[in-house]
Amino acid sequence: MKKIILIGIGLLTFGFSNAQQLETLIDEALKNSPEIQKFELQYNIVSEKVNEVNTIPNTEFGVGYFVSEPETRTGAQRFKVSAKQMMPWFGSITARENYVSSLADAKYEDIVIAKRKLIASVSQSYYNLYANKAKQKVLVQNIELLETYETMALTSVEVGKASAVDVLRLQMRQNELEQLKEVLVQQYLAEQTMLNKLLNRDKDVVVNVVGELTIPPETSLIDIEKLSLHPELIKYDKLYQSVEQSELLNQKESLPMIGFGLDYVNVDKRPNMEFSDNGKDIVMPMVSISIPIFNKKYKSQTKQNEFQQQEIMAEKQQRLNKLESALDKAVKDRISSRISYETQSKNLEQANDAEEILIKNYETGTIDFNDVLDIQELQLKFQMSQIESVKTFYIQTTIINYLSN
Image (tube, rainbow, N blue to C red; front, side):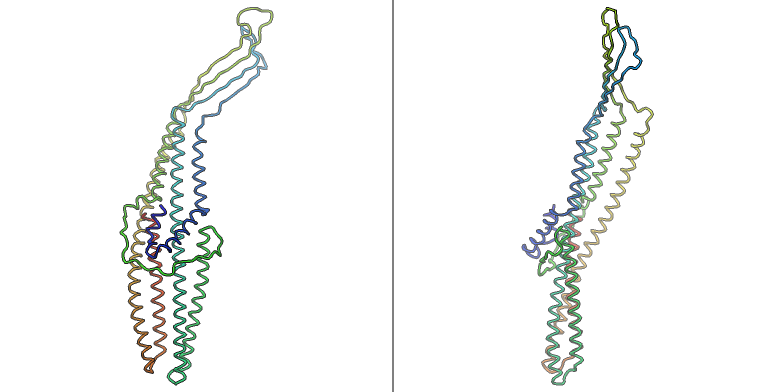
């Protein structure tokens, strides 16, 4: 399942080494996650209950002493010992085992769901780190560009073609970008902590992310039919089956129970008398039956099971509607991210052309540093939007993958 998810995310679009990096993080997360360990232990507990229910009622033993000894023809009765074993109706124990096994099957889906969610969370955190690092890189490039413009402005001030105000505005813009970069650094550390904690390791472990991501030219079509096989929906099917098994068990428990027993009565010999069977002990085998004639519990349980099945099917339909909505939104958002990326690419190309025109104007002796700042601000905006589009594309891909694979 994990390999299918990783392929679905589209990791191979930016190189095997980078795919291996994220796959390594996912492997570590799946191995160390306390949440998954919790669900696995819950599954083990429920599975172990199969051995718990594979039992019959306790054997009953009784001992009685006659304070007032009843006399019989063969002598006085002194004490009584009895043993009794009730047996459930044929197939009752198997019905219990099947019911518990069905509960374990439903609980297993929690493990599958938790793993899927963890893979998606690790991947999304990884892409957030990529976007943050890419934005830092862009800010550094723009700061260096402003430093170049600052040098040009200082030269223009010396020859009287610019004012000191232009230099100060360029410096203030640099300060603003430096601030943005420092804020991104802190946000990166916070996201890195989140990712490390998903991997259940120290928060300060350095996470290295891919240097560059691009949106692939084409993406595979989404098979909506696969949504019906999602573990969140399969779990409802397993719960429905567990209620069916519960009803079968209820029917078995409503049947009579048969008991087998043995009574032993110690008898003293009658004094001064000689006859056959004098003092002969009494041994009495017994068979009993337990019938729930006046017990409405089982009929009530049948009604409860019917209502519970209806509730499960309603919840499944509700969850299916939400999953379909989430999948449709993720697909549309991914398409939108591609459109946005292509638009920002065109805008960035035009902004670069405008920058070249300004540089040529500087060479001819005329340059407006207000235009320089405007173009630089537009370039930064387009670059940041482009990075966000890439991040959105891959994050939406993880959501699509979670829902459709």
